[in-house]
Length: 480
Image (cartoon, rainbow, N blue to C red; front, side, top):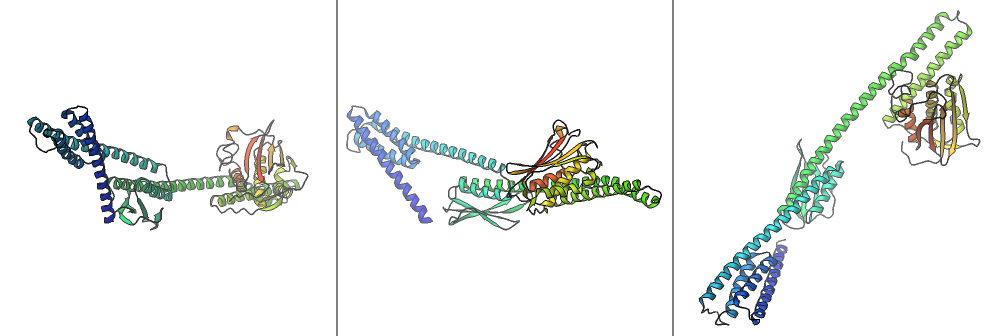
């Protein structure tokens, strides 16, 4: 590497020497030309002074300017003072003129060189400041540990000349790098810190043996922002875990509260009906015994549906829900769902409309039956006894469209979006112990979307409500 550095210095020396010689020759030629036009040596001095300034500017070094000053002094003495073509000076005024020229040329060259260096330094500092700003603002918009690390590696590559890096974090001891092969020269290690402490190390490699201060500043800025971003990401993850834990606890509390409230009513009915049958069986009429048995059956059906909804929601929340699709006949799925709520629909005006042709749709039949049961039970529980309920299925383009509609009082439009949330019921925004825990529609939404379909609620003109869901006729690439 020392040879490369010496070679670079030799090239710079050769380039500056050529520039100095060319400017000096041009200045001398211009002076001779001006002299032929009858211009005095006082004006010719200014030509040589310009040559000194140009030499300093183009070589970016006052050393070449001083060399040019002395060379210009000799040429002025040799060509333009009496006696000409000698280095002897007879006139005292010429001596003073040449001395003033030499001092002026040297001072001007030094001042010009310093001014040029300051301008270059100011421009370099401005570029560095802009780079540091882009680095700081760039880290604000990135999240995820791997993305933050890759952003750091790309910034080292982008904003430093010939540097690459590897990053090793304490938590996994994995070495992250983005560019291969790495430069041959190891520049150094930078500690990645955050408020809690030591996070890891960034190792920087470069193509040159030395790295300037500006590049070191940029590397240190990237390391600092990397530590801040990783600390921010860790804090965000902890906050997210805390939030999810609190939401889970809140959900669990709401579920237990709702289940406890909803179990009281059917258990009270079952206890009362059972005690009444046991204590007064011989004194009850057949119609009364049948009515009590029907009540017991309906309450058991409701409890069964409640347990199924809770189990389904638990599987959905824990991502344990498995969709096993098979081609199912729509008529069979609808018939099975209706049979489960037959007792609830017995005293209702209920109708089913299905396509005349046999239609097979890829679905998990058991889960779609649960969707239909929940929608039918929802229609029964939230409409008046005289309200009619209809279940229909049609083919709409590439989807099976299933509707459960009624002509009851309807639902306020502002509740449409909230109905499919957990613990939300038709009558109240949040379930408050009425029959219906508020999981049925939430389960319906999760199960339908797991099949690649969609579900929504709309008004059933002229009166009532209509729940609609679709299922694709072909297997979509959907993960449950």
